[in-house]
Every structure is written in C-alpha cells, then in structure tokens.
Amino acid sequence: MEELIVSVEIPNNSDEEKTAQLTSRLRNELTELPLESIRHVTGGEIPEGARAAKDAITWGALAVTLGTPVLGNLFKLLQSWISRQPTKAKVTVSIGKAKLAIEGDPSIEQERLIQEFLKTIAANPSARQTSAKKTAF
Image (spheres, rainbow, N blue to C red):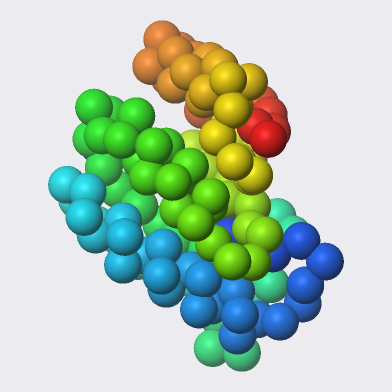
C-alpha cells in the first residue's frame, strides 16, 4: 500500500474556506476509487507551503492510502476533477519527497510527466525519498 498526500491549492488565493470546499469535493470523488483510506492531513504531516487551520487540520490536504495499481486511476481522476473546476486549482501529489503538481486541462505533456512519475515510483521505491518535483500543466 502507498500513502500519499494530495494537496489542493488555489493560486493567488488565501481563502481557506474555498480551499476546504474544493478539497471536500475532491475527497467525495476520491471515494469512488478503491482506496484503503482517506483522511485530512493533521499536525506534523503538513506539506511545505500549506496553511493549517486553527484545529491543526490542513483543509487543503488529504492523506490517501491505496494500492499501487490504483495510482494511474488516481491521476486520471485528478486530471478530470481539475478540468471541471470553475476555480483554477492546482493539485500536488506527494509520495515521500517525490512530488508531481497538476494544473490546467489535460495535455500530452501532462500525461507524459504523469507516466514518468509513475514509472519512477514503481521502478525505484527509493525515489520516494529523493527531492523529485515536477509540474504537469
């Protein structure tokens, strides 16, 4: 099982309530996948740059546990979800220190970066401990 962090960010926006609403909608869609678990990130798990609410829950981040075969479906769901949002949003998926940010409409370049990310994670579990950050637009 893989545990990863899915973070939602609205560029140029500091409205935590709007971020919480978007994250809640994404969480509802994520429950359609065969996940082991999904929960809000709390306390010490806060991703770099994320804002924590007063009760130590990071409303823009979800901890998701899933099997490796589900990773591809997760990225398809994220691409679809981002493209349907009325508010421009960016989603970052983190596994250890390996990160991939997705924003905008799906593109060939975005798909290539996702496939590269998935291959790196599958072929080299130690890559999860390196600082590999990419952005797929």
